[in-house]
Length: 89
Image (cartoon, rainbow, N blue to C red; front, side, top):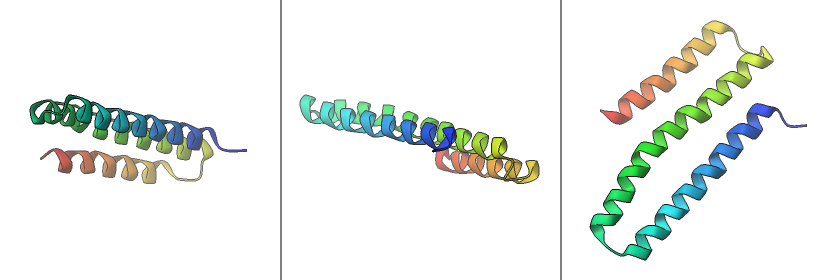
């Protein structure tokens, strides 16, 4: 049986793929650069948010399994925060 955290992470990634494909379809449908840039800007906000959510589910799964100490979990979470910070600067 799969761990619930793995299932949650995979479902969020499927959601991400569906949003990305929908955005690409909308860009082609409207066919205007200005609209495509607007859609891309929305994806720019969606991507990091999804990254944080998937990471949070994974960290939660690690915490629930007891496989990783709290100190290591804090380091992992700090790494996620630094990645998002670095990507937005």
